[in-house]
Amino acid sequence: MTYFLQQLVNGLSIGAQYSLWCVGYGLVYQVLGLMHFAHGDTLIFAAFFAAGLLAMGVPFWLVVIVAMALAAVLAIGVERGVYRPLMSRKQLFMAFIAAMAAGFILRNLVQLIWGVQPRTFPEGLLPSGSIDLGDVRIGHLAIMNFVVAVAIVVGFQLFLSRSRHGQAIVAVSQDRSTAELMGIKVNQIVALVYGLSGAIGMVGVFMYITNFRTITIGLGFVITLKAFIAAIIGGIGKIRGAILGGMVLGVLEAMVSAYLSTTLLEAIVVLCLVAFLIVRPNGIVGIRESVKL
Image (tube, helix red, strand yellow):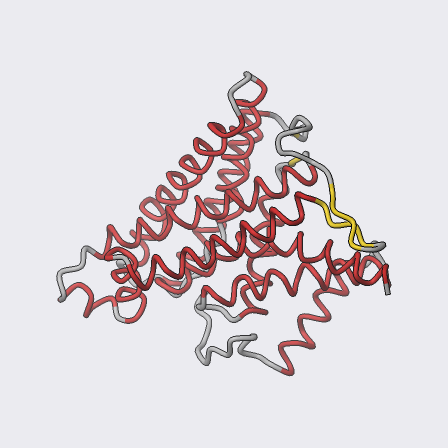
């Protein structure tokens, strides 16, 4: 039982990272009905830039702010340079292809600027230590990951429901044409959505960094894949489903690694996902609508 509880704690900590990756991913889908397949690569570009700043001795708190801003700018750039021209012509499938191409370009830019070698972050970026509850050890970083993820998701829900810009985002997600008639500057709101997706996702990347300390170019694809799977589990198009989907995915991976196989982890997780979709195809929050690529 102790081993199970320890893996549950580990899974929730990992799931917190997935949740924040998924929030930005799901936010774009909620507003535009599109999968943001360049999401992970924008975050990894900003993460490599952050590694360079830390190597220069820039304080960690300032690096976090700069990296979040850079991820937001890159996400907005992808929207304006890739999505917007194609969406204005109703080219949904081409937007999907172009998003993958944008991610590929960002990946190659990272390789061109920083090389192919992984980047290792220094130890002690955040306080370490743990709390022992009986035989179960809960790390301070695990607690921080969970608290930060929940706080951001709750805060973002309050932003959507109580702020003027948040209500504009909701209006655009419900009916873009009507929102334009109401005087909402839709293009500005869409840019805001992409910027928020980059900034929030970058928080999840820093959670990953504080746990594993190493990033690679290929991590961008992993982030996009995890966000996609978590969004499906939680329910695509609902922000509150992001934290649920991320936590479920994190716990599932922890349990599969602990009790079944680490070698076949990804394959088993995908099989579990397929089985879950057979039982509940609309995800945990149950949205009944088709998914547009």
